[in-house]
Length: 186
Image 1 (tube, rainbow, N blue to C red):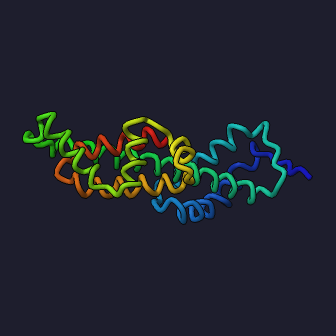
Image 2 (spheres, rainbow, N blue to C red):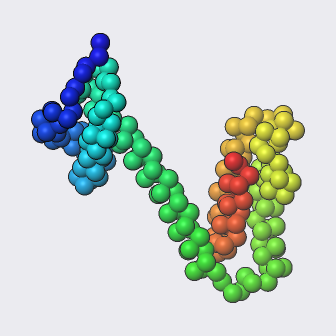
């Protein structure tokens, strides 16, 4: 069953009828009124631009709420990516600002890292070194050590937490270690 809607003729009525409800719906998810309005306006723009080719197989209300739902999901996913980037950027910025000139010697840096790694529990240290020094992926390490990939992930998480505590005075080192962790994890 296909609902033939003459958007050209009925657009104003559709807009007046649905706009407030769609705004309220979007606002429940995106919080800010302005963002909800932008999403709903984008939906109406889409409807207008595609008015000649749209073939809506459900009720217009269901179709429009579905469009708003998907736009809200896209908006929220995009915001998550932006927030993750901001966190990483702020961590790097903080690391640079806290870079201590007393840690400038290669020997001091290497000694601090080695001491921190040597304080890790044996299995945790072994997994960390295979990942970081040998550049192995989690699956490789899991196969070699006859462990699950989940166990490797957990051990790496433990290692990073302990290193974060141990190297707290060497924030740039921590950023380097975490950065290389995410590079090898993916």
